[in-house]
Image 1: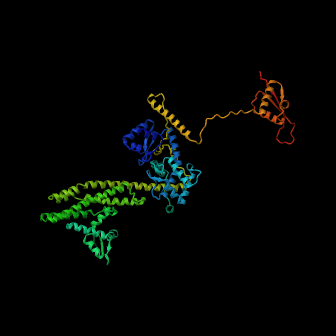
Image 2: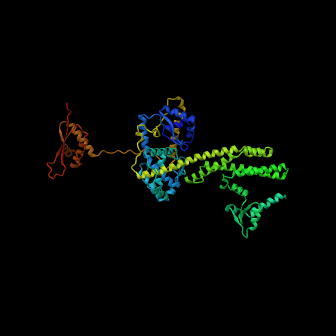
Image 3: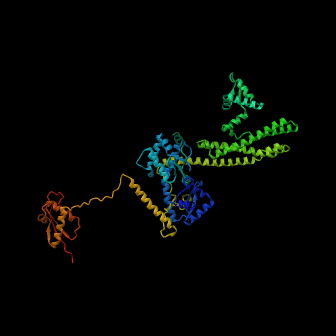
Length: 207
Length: 407
């Protein structure tokens, strides 16, 4: 398991209960985690975990010039992901008729989502609006194709795992914990005003 | 048939006969008397199935109510604020009564009180067991029985307050005092000690654990609420500010630790054919590849469609076109007549009858323009001065000569 965990970490994976339960449990064991960390440290990395300890990933031991350049590339990718992932999370709250945002471990059924969106023009329009993001563009404008593209891209980015290939059931991974952490960081450090005017919030809830 | 058996049979028959009335009393809380049901209600009251409720009403008897709650797993059984204090009071009263009956040698009364005390103790233990188990289930399922966050928070707060009351009530119990009361009555002492007093710390600890879990869950629920608000707030903000780009934190003097994430590495390894330790495995792999390939080919051969035949196709000899033959002859002629200028038009008229002069000149010109013949000196003869400014130049002849190598 050591080898599996280390290889995944070096390849930039977020290891969580959903993505690889065995590897996650392995890293959750203090002694094993220390062994992995000791190995990574020889390569200039260290074992890190998300705020709520829902996922493990590898970070640089020291941020030198090379590391800085590589972190920049990762950060640019986060910038690309920020808007569409936030849109997706909010849209899923509407689709699932929930007052809570998705959390690691939650499941999404393709057929259920498709049914909900097909019966709600506002949601269908919202799904279509994802084409404005480069990674979500496609030639087929049908709801089914759009939804496939949406989930496939989020799967590619590591926020979803295809839990059941036949039933097309996706499961939210621990990477989302990192994303929420990032949102909180940005909001706190950039003083983003996230309070919606009451009227807007009320109107949205009516939809 | 004994008297007890007969009484039991009568009770069950009554329960079955008046099931609708009992159900109504249980579900509605009360059944009111009218001309039709008066007799039945009286009978059920005598059997202690129903009890009077106001002037004309009947409610379900307490114990039957508890039994039905329990049997139906109703939420009503989850009343954790069960009046524990009054329960204990009753227990103490029953113990006093038992003690009196015992000292006055009233054996039958003593037996009845003992049975009542047993029931109380077992009921109390059952209630604690059921409720703690039910609560554990609720907590572990994270209140899956309700959907919305607000409802989960409400349930969580509700059970926290109830649990706190129960924990306090158990803590307020004075087991030593109870045991002192029955010190001289070994049957009661053993009963209380084994069935209640010894279990109290267990229940207390279990309730405390549940309480701790509920508090953690309440904290998580608050986080979840904040997270949902943050997502919605960001969506709103991004819609209001479509050009927003988050600050480039990777450019900060000190990159915040949070953004420290490694760039994925591409890992790839090769088999070492010189490593004898893995030689057998490599051979296996190599052989498997061969087998796989053969299997694949065999499979393909079976397919009727797209079958590939290895039949030799007939060779087809393409003849060199006449103009190419003549061009070759012209170039050889120019080469042989080294130093002399040869007119392409004259050569055509002399040796080639089958190609029209204009076409022949076009072929020669095309060959010259390909610039493959560096040793040829080429001169185009043009037709006088064009007067119509058409942009075309009319070639009347092409003079070729072999360029002698410079010494």
